[in-house]
Length: 304
Image (tube, rainbow, N blue to C red; front, side):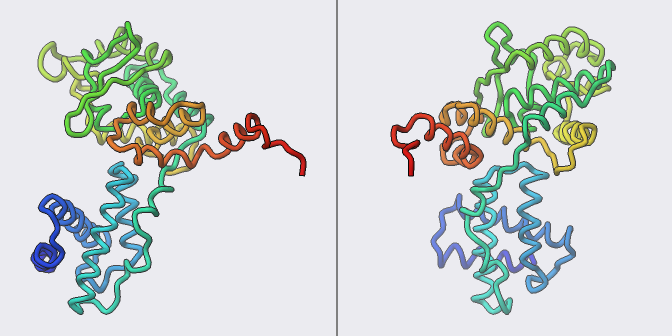
């Protein structure tokens, strides 16, 4: 189906007047979708693709890749524009994406764990061996900071600032931000650095000396391995939900908001450029807002 994408590029560039950056983003998303449809679904023609295939593609981006809401919304827009083109050129008989909602659909995307579920995952690795202690520390840091899985893999020893209770995180676009750690995560990290990491470390130079979390062979942990650590924690905790690293990020933000944290502060800790991205978490906090209104609004408790 690559030839159809090439035809679409010419059409979109000339007819829609899209900017180069927008065009590149759409082409990247459409190509990813066509590859997903072919490899995962065996769909080799546009007419064989169903609405469910599009939904599965978006779910794959959400769960396996941990994409942000804005990225998922852009993927949906790209696929819809592509199918609209195919319909206009009579390459397909009907547009399966036509009935799908636009980006606002994804404002309700974030799933999160309850506090008891998070506690169970934090206690999942009970062993005293090096890997269990390392994994327990990773879980504490995930929930304490709300960082992405790639950011976790990139944490460095010299980024820890125990005297201030902070950690330096390198996010998307190599942008750095400082995130609070919290006492539980600090305790786990101190123990990991003193007792566990020296047992995992194999050399005194290179990336092994700089990276915070190491494998059993002394190498920096990969994103895939960290993903597996989170999935295993959910299994050990008896949680049947589809748990993935980004759900801990959602839980971090949702629990902060429920506790009364300012949305702008949460935005800064998450590393969101746009406050609108952070606002997706406000849907979890309606009960707190209602209770605050009942407690403090002068006419909230007026009798009927």
